[in-house]
Length: 168
Image 1 (cartoon, helix red, strand yellow):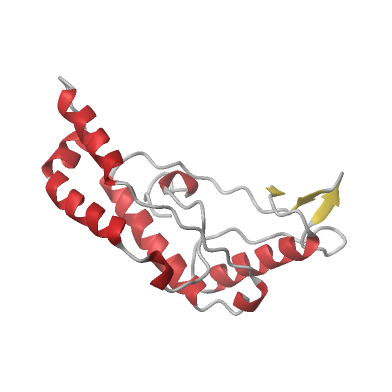
Image 2 (tube, rainbow, N blue to C red):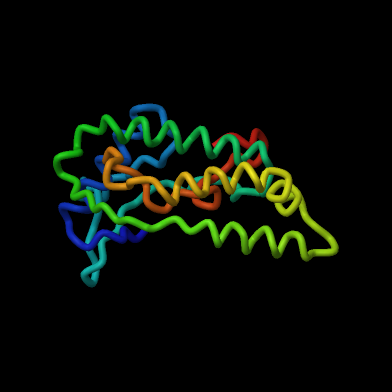
C-alpha cells in the first residue's frame, strides 16, 4: 500500500496510530516489517508500507452494515480522542458552512421521481426533522467545538466487511 504521507516521520506516525488503534481492539491491518525490519520503505520518493491482504466486501448499502459502520466510527473517534501521539499530529481546523439548501435539493429530486428507492422514501419521511437539524447546524458556532484527531475520509465504502458474518 502506498502511503499518502510524503515524509518518513509522517509515515511512521501513521503506522504508530494504526497500531495503537489495533491494540485498542479496532480491526485494522498490522504493518509487516520489511526484510530490513523497517516499517516502511521508500522508492522513487514514494513511501510504502506492507500490510496483509484483508479479504472482505465493500459496503452493500444495507442498514445492518451502515449501523455497524456508525458504531465503528464512534469507536475509532473514542480511541483517537485519547491517542498518545496527539502532540505529534498537526491538527487543522477547517470550517465548512452547512447549507440546508443542499438537503432541499435532494428532497426535491426525490419528490419528482415516479419510482423512489429506499433512500428517497427515508429522506422524505424524515425531511422535516432533518431540516430542523440542518438549520441548527447552519447556525452553530463551529469555532466553539472541541478539537481532536479524526479520520478525515471515513465512510461506509472505506471499510471492509466479512463476506459471511458481515462484521468489520
